[in-house]
Length: 193
Ligand code: CO
Image: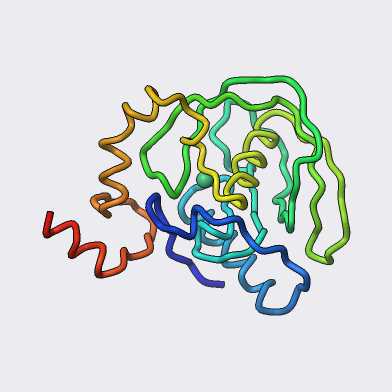
């Protein structure tokens, strides 16, 4: 199991629709283990493959260490090729993202979602998710479609976050977890400006 560098806002990989997974091999099992490890080290509760630079429809979720008042029992989840099939309700909750460090915002999303996904044996599952789990699953499934939580904000809300987002894009940020390095040409083009 490895700790993988996390790709931050500005990297193209976060903006691509991911490829479906059609077979599970040792390499994929290793990737899943590394993703859980990476997420735990960064004290995240969800992590999608594009966030570690991988073009695959895969996300891991573990709410057992979520900072919420009540201690709920959650099993860690590995979602392969997840799709939201139905939803209802609407609720505002604050979100953050390991790929957008230090930025947090209230986002409105459905309260309940029905998700179809494949497990590690590629068996199909259909689950109803509520509460924090519904929220995290929607955030992660968005990642698999190249969507970030800030995309759900109004223009004005996003404008307010621009200075922070620009800093992240330029790599002008420090985190206590490993980040992917910006390509050299990006760094140079910023210096020239
Ligand atoms: Co995220």
